Image (cartoon, rainbow, N blue to C red; front, side, top):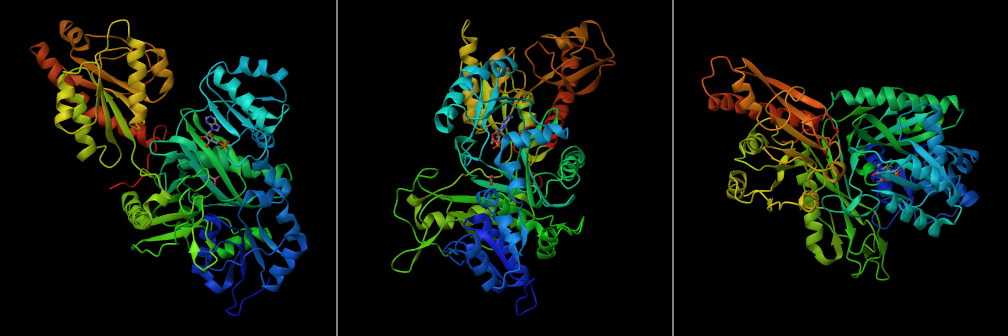
Length: 620
Ligand code: AMP
Ligand code: GLY
């Protein structure tokens, strides 16, 4: 391989976006700016060469620049076989050939691989014409996901709530990709997403830091899907048992499967997971790094990355060699106005800003006729903050982003909630003692830094819980629930919960059984506390029956809510010592003390399990 004057390897990163700029930045830190080129890159990224052609012309141009190692960024180049061409021309290349790239480029190929190697994933029915639809509708009568088989720049997946939406999605995909478009209809999974990154070479792999992307355009996961509006790393605590589970159930069988299939693969593998109540499942493979994920995982790779890349390219990956920094990184994408469509304002200048512990990565920049660097459109910049906690990293990223936006407010947009903590919607109809305990735990107890109360919901606008919430400055949605209008009330409450960006519905002395539509909408994300053992006593009067029967002990239960009356899976139970209790009041007082301790602790466990919400570790 070519050596630069300093003796280091010269590396070319192919692509023009923020992912490639982030790669080049990390590599330059390690082996010097002179030893990295970005092809073509962009006007805001050091080392950018501009277009160097394709095929033999590209190979010759890289050779002329004494490039030995090539890292390919975008999926389109991989799918087009650029890795194969450059390997044939004698370059060491990080990135799979066209065949390996099918793991990303064809969702059917990916699904067949997952099923063949028994890697957990959503159940599927494939359709190639309207004649196949009946089988899919029969298999998935409820929520489902329609995915076009081929590369579609993030616009080939439609998540549907019901068969009507699925029908519309199929019609839409067929209108865009042809009447016989190959479409996968999948079981719709629920849970938070997690992105896992590997460097893979010939059956060996190393794990890189994980990340979580924010794909929707607007705060609270609203608005259209984008390439990604922000990301954080880490997502899991270093000792989270989920890591071992993902390694055993997903990563190991995937790498073994590649080897067993004889599929040549040297490059990054980006595994998109959903952390479902039944465990982690694969949503997709990408055969490259992500944008903005690359911007947040690369700064966490400690020690030498370039030897790892070179080892990967040569099929001699040093196993287990990646040192991961415990520091936190947050990336806030600063998109141009109008994104994901075209920019509307005139292109602003590439800003010069600086904040300690933060840096800008440039995703799209051009030189105007006057020789000035401008940001014409798309996801123009990523503000990357690094810190000892998630909150510190986020704070630095937003300070830097704020300085950018200040220079041309109308020209930029960003999400204000990258890496924010999960929000609870607390439902209460009474005095709100559990609500107060949970709020206190968010401020200073078990939930400190882990969660916040995003909304208080009540069907009794004058109850103690509502009055206390208003006085405490909490956001409240309280509407009387009229007889015969329960479904309507629940639909409005659900909309309020979603508008407030809440991740978990916490019933805290809420005197109603929620209907099936509400439960389905927040499936696996509604919990209730019950003043008895739900296996023995359901409904009202938990403390009354304990008192009347003069029990020595009763059990408090926290459970997931399904459609029934106190029937969902039990999450936690704690005993209440009732010996010597002299009145119903005393029974209740002792019980509530246990409730107020148990509920926050159980919420903490639910959030830490990763099955709910956008939990980030290491909050302050
Ligand atoms: P994909 O391109 O397959 O990653 O899909 C894009 C996005 O659609 C994912 O990040 C998920 O948010 C969502 N998605 C894909 N498949 C499913 C599924 N089976 N269940 C629920 N959501 C899904
Ligand atoms: N941020 C998602 C991707 O790069 O695919």
